[in-house]
Length: 120
Image 1 (tube, rainbow, N blue to C red):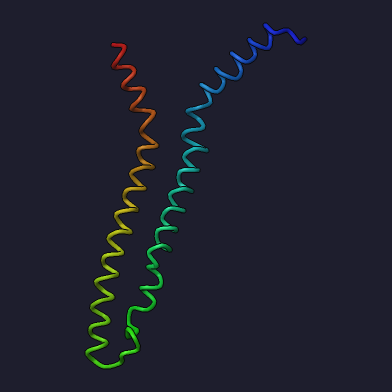
Image 2 (image 1 turned 60 degrees about the vertical axis):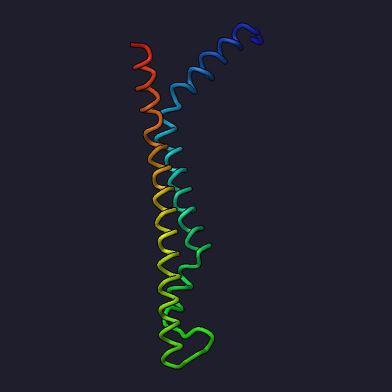
């Protein structure tokens, strides 16, 4: 049955309409899971690129092997300032990525709402 008409009907009804019906299911299941994996990777990459674990680990070690009281005091103050700055950037980026995932969730609902408003 290599009829062009039947192949065209199959394409229209199964592929196009089936994909249109399956799309919301995919968006909120597999697609959302992929966004959560992306979110976790972004947080991990940001943590590693800012080297926050290393900064936390070496928090109370003296900088430049200066073991004097003043050297340790300067070292701890500088590390606190740098760590605070890096933590602010980390939290800001985490919030941005979480907002992106939330936009992923509500985007189809907003689009459908706007389409309904347009046809009223």
